[in-house]
Length: 541
Image (tube, rainbow, N blue to C red; front, side, top):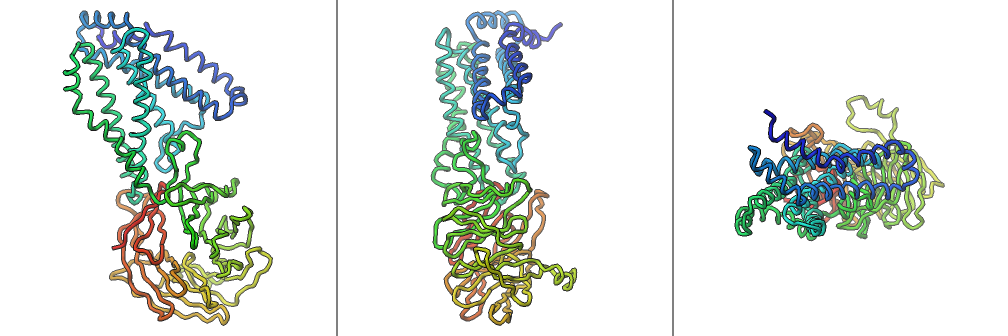
C-alpha cells in the first residue's frame, strides 16, 4: 500500500509541474550564457535580479498551493485518505519549500556565485546568503498561510501585505536581534557566539510553526477566538525581537564593523572587521585597521570609513598605528615598511623599513625602530624580545639620522616625551626604561607586579598630560578551554608619574579574551574589541 504522504507529494508535483520546472529552463539558460550575462549585467543588477526572482517564486508557489480548486481537492483527499490535517498541510508546505530553496540556490549560483558561502563566524559577509534564504522562507510561509485564508484575486494583495509586515519584523526585529548577538561583548569565544546565533533562529522557527498552526485551524474551520487562544502563547516571543531595535538604537558599541547590518549584507556598505584601533590626540576620530589590510577612520558609535586600501597583491595586515601629536597624520607598519598617511593631503608616503614608529612632539620627526638581527643573535635564543636600532627620520622621509647603540624594548610601548628629549618605554621585565636621546643613557625603573604574575607578552603606554602615563602590562597568555582559536590573558594597569618616577598600581583584569585593548589614560574605562570588530567600554574595578 502506497504511503498517503508520498501520494500527496506526487500529486503536488504533478499538479504544479509547470511552475516548478519551468524556472529550471531559465536557470539552465543562465548557466549556459553565464559569461555573456556577466558582461551584460552590472554586479548590482545581477544581484537585484538574483534576489527578486526567488521572492517572486515564493509568492507563486505558496499561493498556488491553495487556489479554490486545490482547496476542494485537499478536502477530498482529507476525506478519502488516512491523513491528519497537519500532515496534509505539512506535506504541501514542505513540497513547495523544497523546490523553492533548490531553485533559489541554483539561481544565485548562475548570477552571483561569489555571494554563496558556507557561514563563517569570522567573516560576517559569508552570512549574507544564509540570511537571504531565511527571508525567502519567511515570505513563502506568510504567503502560504494567506493563500489558505483568502480566496479569489485578493490573495496576491493579501500575501504582499502580510509579507510586508513580515519584512518589517525581519529587518527591524530579527535582524536587530542577530546584530546584538554578533556584536555582544562575549570576549571573542566563537563557540558561544555560534550558540547565540543559533538561538536567534528560535523566533523564526516559532513564526513558521505559528503559521502552520493557523493553516490547520483554517481547514478545521476554527473560529477567530479559538485561533487566538491557540496562538496567543506565541505572540510574546514574536514581539521579543522588536525590542532589540530599541536596544541597538540606544546602546551602540563605541565603534562597530557596520553602520547598518542590512546595508552591509546588501552590499551598499562594506564590512570593516577591526583588529587595531587608536584614538586621535585631542580629537574625536579613531584610526583603525581591519583583517583585509585596510586603514579607516571612525567617529564614536560609527563604523570606520576606508581611507587606504593597502597593498592588494600581498596578504598584508597593517599594524602599530600611531597618530601624530597634531592629529593630522597616521604612521603604520605595512609588510615591514613604515608608512605615513596625511589626512590633509590624502597622500601616502613610505618612510623606511622598520617595525615600529613613534612621533616627535612637533609631529615632524619619526623615531623608527628596526629589528637588529645581529644584536638579537648575540643576545641569545633565550632573550624574550627583539633588539631594535633607532633612527630619526623626518616625516617627509628626506632626512635620516642613526642613533648610536641599541635599546631593548617590546614594540608597542614607547613614548617620546613632549618637552624632554627622552624616550619612555616598558620592557617585558616589569621595568620602565627612560632613555635620554642626547646622551643615550638609559635609566631602568621597577614596576611592582601583581601577586603571582604570569609571563609578560605585551606592554602599552598611553600619555596623560606632560608627565603622567597609563601603563598596561599583558600577562599569562593561554589558550581558551572553550575554543582553540581563542586565547585568554590577564591585564595589569598602572599610573606612572615621570616627576617622582613612581608606577602606582591601578587595577587588574583577569581572564580576558578581547582581540584588542585600547588604553585611555586618565579614564576609569578601557575599550575592548571582540573578533567581530566591535569595541565597547570596560569599567575598571
